[in-house]
Amino acid sequence: MSLFNTVSKKACGNLLRSRTTSISNPVLFYHPNVLDHYENPRNVGSLDKNDKHVGTGLVGAPACGDVMKLQIRVDENGKIIDAKFKTFGCGSAIASSSLATEWVKGKTVEEASKLKNTDIAKELCLPPVKLHCSMLAEDAIKAALSDYKIKQESPDKEHDSKASG
Amino acid sequence: MLTRVCSRLRIICKLPESQKKHCVYKKGCHRALIYPTMLLDFCSKCAPHCWKCGSEIQNSTLFCSQCTTLQKPNEKNYFDILGIEQSFEVKDKELKTKYHKLQNVLHPDRFNAKNVEERDISERYSALVNKAYSTLLHPLARGLYMLQLHGVNLDEETRQSDPQFLAEIMQANEELAEAQHPEDVKELDNANRSTVEKLIRDAARAFSTGDIDAAKKVLVKMKYYSSIGTRIKDMKQKIGIE
Image (cartoon, rainbow over all chains, first blue to last red; front, side):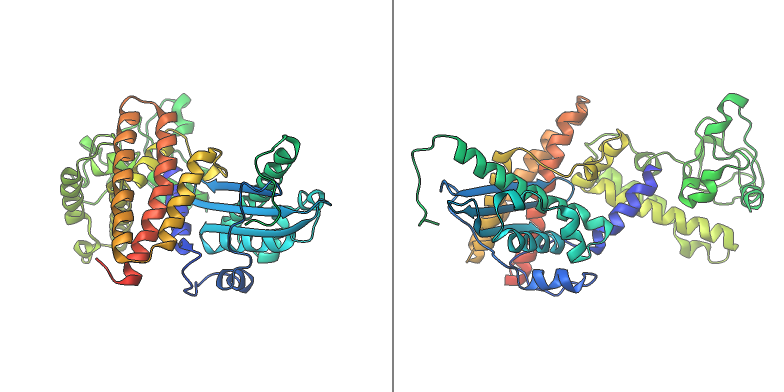
């Protein structure tokens, strides 16, 4: 059985080769919704991670070596006014995080925490082998929200600017 | 259908009743029918017999000593298939020699004059040997395969929770994305290579002491750095440097 597993997994891996955000070659096998985000990723960039109003989520997938950073800026009313991401991984991972930043913008912290990977996977029509990319995006949102909450709860005096980043 | 498939296998295994359920030679084995690949996973407890003439195969040779027919691959894992010791520290030269020797006799081109069944076995066997060779040749693939042999599969792990390590990987990726000059890319390439080499040494140490948990941690790191390595390669191609 182990032989069979290795062969099939390797075959899938070769079909969907990893790419970075910086390369814009059209990639076969991807759904148009993925390609759209892959070719024109929304909200690429960084926010100041030391800003008290910014939550940073940094996650990685050991199985494919992808790494994803997702940041949110929250206003006084608990509304997410900005979101940025940087993902180094396959097209599906880039598209998942790009879509995630689009979706969390304008939502409250509470609403954003309800976002599910299945919604992302559905919107992008991800095949089963790429579901973990959408899970990574969900993890990234959760991590960013949790980072933001920790910052709010801790009496942080060193940095409190809304303008930076 | 079941009986037909099994009779084609010429089931002649003589196992005690208690062990019979583990043997793929057993008549009416469902697994053999559902997963054709399972046929590669033959029972190790019973001496193999030639699928064509039924004679016992001694010392797991490739060909039957009686009718000179190529036998189906019956080894358990890639190390056995290539006939090398199961260790992370594979000697490239030994691996290459064994591989070439095997392909020399197994290649489908050598079976053009043989019957369809034997040609089919040579194709499957040859493909399996290729797969085994490419897996064992590359340290990361070899390590991941060895983890699999220990029942550890990284594909089931969806998250990585060491923030400091992730920040390090993120930074390395960002540096590469922002690299402007070929020299910068070369420098990053060298740094990445030496990191991977260090991790290969760490993995060898972990596997040799049987510390699978430590080996797993090292291989996860190696996977991230190898992804960066792939990106560096793409980048080098793009800017046209060696």
